[in-house]
Image (cartoon, rainbow, N blue to C red; front, top):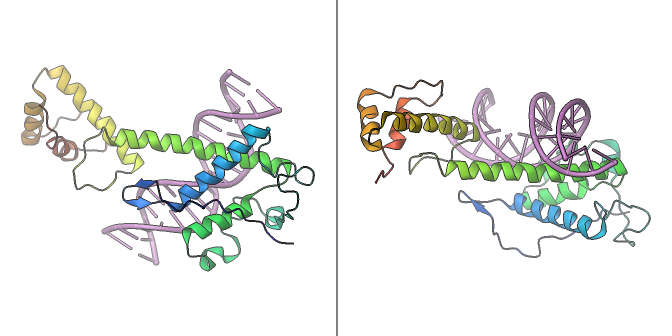
Length: 205
DNA sequence: TAGGCCATCTGGTCCT
DNA sequence: AGGACCAGATGGCCTA
């Protein structure tokens, strides 16, 4: 018997670029998921393998997923020294996808849940990206982590509220903070210099 | 090399 | 029942 591997990467173009990096894993994974979800939508099945042994989408294919019989999908992600034998990220993702395809009913449900969870996390991450665009950062600053994004946003909102309450001109308020120190009443991790220095880059007019 | 950050998988819980 | 949400576990990548 032989493992079956679907070639989803016929289009080699890399159309997902984030912070200067092309995430081939993400691209391939998205293709896999899109394929599976589209198929489930069209046929009512969660995956082409969900009716394993009867009306398979690929009736001639002999599928072997012996790894899954022994380990959970999560546990097998880096099983049997794969990380040392596969260097190419795209090949690694293909390898994982091949090994993660379930055929038992529970595993099919679990696999579908994993896809939904990934999509949910993607939506959360896109919200973080949006939030990063709204918090003050230095032009040369590296990408904020999620936790730093949240903390900076909290501090930023607190400062904006104080500016509103003060009725002062925003720029002069920030200048004053730079000179005298920002009287931060919140417990935000981001301190005076962190926030006001960033705000000094903002064009207020 | 250790630590931080992240993606992913997973099982439990809650909600519709 | 199935999906959404959540938190823990795990492993990979990157940087100081």
